[in-house]
Image (spheres, rainbow, N blue to C red):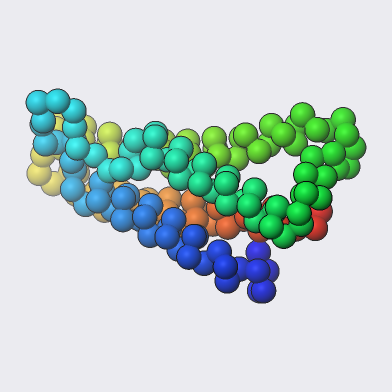
Length: 162
């Protein structure tokens, strides 16, 4: 983002990191899927595709806002750079960014919780503990990756060229 332009985005990126981190750790510290409910189940909030899509869409709104705020309507000139033939691909890129953000977070957290749930149901005592510790590490890394990608997308939208 640059040394001058990062300050206004620290609250957004920091809040995103902390919310993903706490959500992931709430699912990694306690294997919520083991608790049986009559209707539904307990799980980490980031284990739901709706939550991860909402976070990704917030990031999309933020990088459109950053680009428009920094460069005005000349921001949309990036879609026809270097040639207008690439317009469909450049538009498609803005749809794939939130899609990849949401699926990488959702898929990794869901896979971690499913592995722990299966191990807890098969071998309930010692074996799941290392996987749960690995889940804590993975959850922290996923929060860092999501916040870093959000910052990179916002920084890219504020650049002078594409």
